[in-house]
Length: 144
Image 1: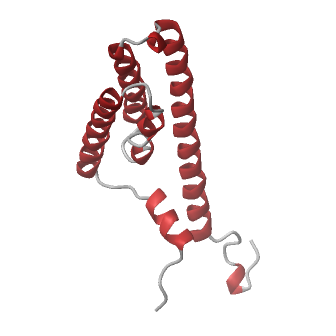
Image 2: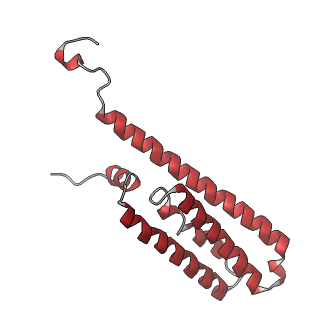
Image 3: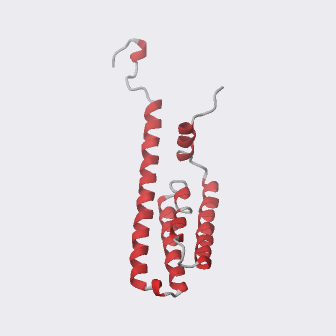
């Protein structure tokens, strides 16, 4: 027996539909990661471009919980970065640029959520169509 290909494993991961009991820990993990990245961002300060790490709690939860929870995690990740930047109270932490950056980040996060959800929808459709017979009865020599 051969090992599944990387493409097959990736498809399996993307199409995973865990039970509702498995979704709550994913949501909590995403919230905890958001909090940890916020604390790390506060600790390291504005000298480092730490905001890129806020996408990490958002994407793994995409499609595994539900759309509202995914959006909530994205909003919390952006709000955490915004609040942390405000708490750092430096000249670079002016409210208007922070608000603009946060809205741009939120649009990127929501765009990533949408793209991941579309990828999941297309893969589900492809898997469903691969299991269906396009010409029922054609194997029996009977035309539809």
